[in-house]
Image (cartoon, rainbow, N blue to C red; front, side, top):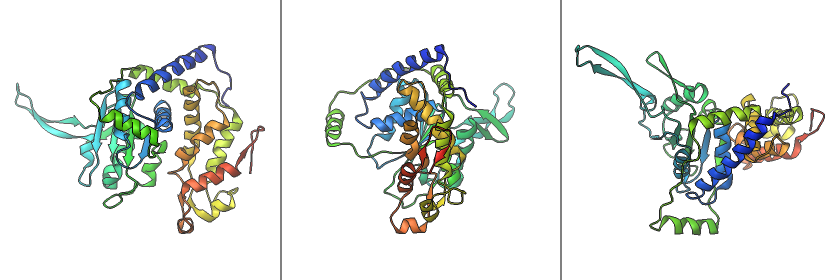
Amino acid sequence: MESTDIQQHEIAEIEEFADKRDTMLGEIRKVIVGQDEVIEEVLIALFAKGHCLLVGVPGLAKTLLISTLAEILDLEFNRIQFTPDLMPSDITGTDILQEEPATGRRQFQFLKGPIFTNILLADEINRTPPKTQAALLQSMQEYKVTAGGTTFPLDLPFFVLATQNPIEQEGTYPLPEAQLDRFMLNIEIRYPSFDDEVQIVMQTTSTEKPSPRKVMEGRAILRYQDLVRKVPVSPFVVSYAVALAQRSRPKSLDALQFVKDYVEWGAGPRASQYLILGAKARTILQGRYAVSIEDIQALAPSVLRHRIVTNFKAQGEGLSSLDVINRLLSEVKPSTDGKTAR
């Protein structure tokens, strides 16, 4: 059982982190207008050592947000444009034949691909076949790449942000469930409000170009990622997170009737883990010291959206996985005795 106590030096670290958070947000907002929820969830995934799938139409500053994040965190950034002819070696790297000038001896040398970076933007990831998509699997889970029988470690921190266009499906390859499950959060990016769009147009059509400054570096990020794991969480909050995931499974013994009616596959154990890790990161990003039920509820849509597969009946009635999540949040109730009531 995890202790709910927190050490005094960890409280000081959380307060320091909250100050850094305010500075990060200030620098990001020099470039990105609005999208506060998106920015918060991207930071949650980064400091929880997760990865993000960003879903939104073109022109919503997905690439700009990611490159700005890399700039203020002083991290190396690479972008891969996924296309139907992209090969796995275009991502991971390839062996090339090299000749030593002194001896004339020839040997193969591994030339690292763009995946060897800190922040990787996988742009329009669903435009490439599953074989190429799968080239990301090992690196996202194990932080290493195997090529030609040799395993190469990735520099940490390592953070993958992939994008998808939800309105243009011709010539795309839907991500397999195993690939989707590697993404901690599925973040939906919506159109800006009227006032935000006015500010965006004013800012992007002038001669002034904002220059965000560096706020943090890689070693500090790793330290704060470790701090996230130390944030206390009570057993009843963990029980609530597990209950949300378990009751999304139609074959679970205590599955709710609407789940049996409308869900083909529910969320696996990784969903429970990410609900807790994400809630811990959200807690310290907001300068708090303990995880609450509200943290779990706030993250549930982004954690569960891509892990719940609705059936044909749901699709026929126009119900999405988000509708199922909203029903789960309204019907699964937490209780303080460590159990979760229906």
